[in-house]
Image (cartoon, rainbow, N blue to C red; front, top):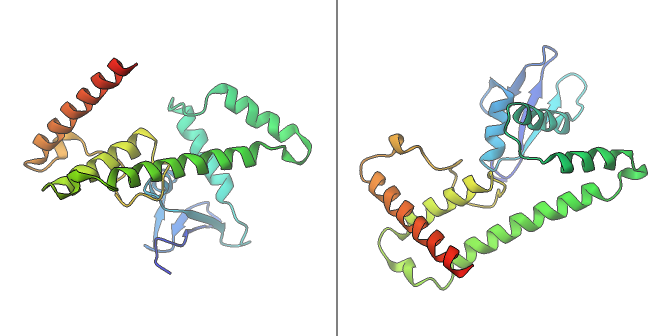
Amino acid sequence: MAEQDKPLLIKRYASRRLYNTETSDYVTLEDIAGFIRDGREVQIVDLKTGDDLTRQYLLQIIAEHESRGENVLPVTVLNDLVRSYMVPGGGVMPQFLQASFDMLRDSQSKMMENMNAMNPMANIPGFEAMKAQQEAFLKAMTGGLSGSWTGGSSGPEPESAAPDGEEEDLDAIKRQLSELQDKLSKIK
């Protein structure tokens, strides 16, 4: 099994420090959030008891992002989540959320497949670079929800970090995006 296929094991020590077993170093919650954004599954276990703490830490990551003003979950959704805990047996909310995210990942994957299939542009030089940029853009726009993309990038690079020649590509993509937005607005 490839390293990327199995969850990244993080051990929590008694001191509450988190230890990455692959790189043999300590990590923060933000590091763990970065692993997840990059499409990696994580598993966090207590070193002493062996208890799985993954859910607790993932909720903590979400809470920290929400508290910094990075509001992803609307208040109505948060209210529904709290209500779902009050229903005996947990209600249908967990299954609904799982099915919704599965459908979102599936539709994103199909969209990428459709972009690749029967595309006459695939033979044009530079198409692969443009495709990778589109994947990075889609991943950034959806918050990196899809772990099935092969782009490996956690989002578009800042313009200042682009090597020579890529700034022109970025400008071309911006122009193309603007043209697509114009066409979409005319369709509506």
